[in-house]
Amino acid sequence: MRDGGADETDVLIIGAGLVGCASAHYLAQEHVECLVVDRGEMNREGSGTNAGSLHIQLRGPERLYSEEVLREFLPMKAEAARGWAQIETELGCDLGLKLHGGLLIAETDPEFAFVREIVEYERGLGLPAETLSTAELLRICPHLSPRLKGAAYSAAEGSANTLLVGPAYARSAQRAGARFRTHANVVATERLNGGGFLVTTSGGGGRAQRVTHPPRPLPAQRRPDPRETDPQRCRPLGERTDQDGRRCAPHHRACHPGQRDGAA
Ligand SMILES: Cc1cc2nc3c(=O)[nH]c(=O)nc-3n(C[C@H](O)[C@H](O)[C@H](O)COP(=O)(O)OP(=O)(O)OC[C@H]3O[C@@H](n4cnc5c(N)ncnc54)[C@H](O)[C@@H]3O)c2cc1C
Image 1 (cartoon, rainbow, N blue to C red):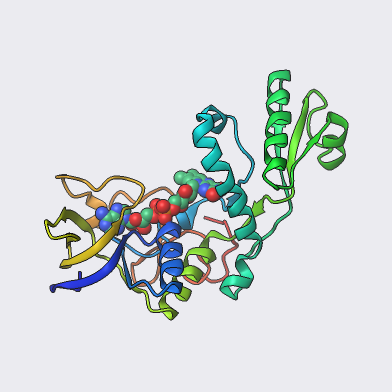
Image 2 (cartoon, rainbow, N blue to C red):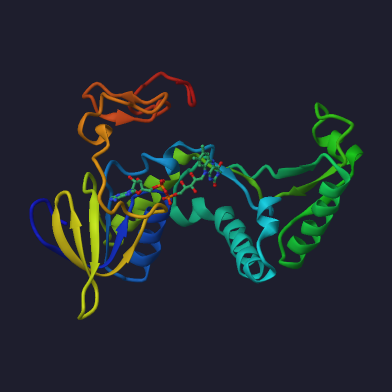
């Protein structure tokens, strides 16, 4: 995976988004050798461009999971809430974390019944959650409609700055020995008979004992996306380039000094 040459690692992490950078951080803390490769820049896709909301409460579609899945999933949410609350201390920097609480609003009686149910469920897991009547909800948010049936409120919810969190994990991972390689597109992973994987990237090949994949499956055989060869073509909405023609987020102040956060 080194440019033009072979490389070896214990864990190959494909994708330097939040999941890849955090995985590298936690593995490196445990002295597990790891290499993170990304086809583009670190934190450039979903992780660096999303709203940054910390959703802890169970949502309607999630309630459709089986009880078995929920029993595994909800403790992870509880653990995530505890993790986010101390993330700035853990990574030793400002991540724009704001735990101002979040609302799950019920517009109908069945939704309010659902809200009551999940509040009970969450409290059972030790998550801070409470049911608000319409009057209590309007005291917090007077601009909402009095026709609403109520809400679930969780003090564990809030937001973080998506431009800061992934890179902070990456810096910490690198300090602990993790390696990062950008502009290396993983095009194939092949399981080896003797164990481990043979990995082929646009910058060369290598071996890894274990491999983690990004959210989408790796393409089997596909035509190259024009954006991979011509960054000026088919740019996503709002995408900007810096003075050197490198792609960057529209609200990345390091690239566009003087521009307000969130301004395109
Ligand atoms: C519009 C929108 C709003 C969202 N809002 C929120 C929110 O408010 N709160 C929240 O918690 N979540 C939100 N999400 C979801 C959140 O963005 C994702 O869950 C999270 O970013 C996933 O992180 P990731 O590291 O798995 O993926 P990504 O950030 O997408 O990173 C995957 C990385 O893998 C790399 N990659 C992919 N294929 C290859 C390959 N073959 N070789 C090498 N590298 C490869 C990509 O270049 C990319 O950098 C939102 C998502 C969207 C789309």
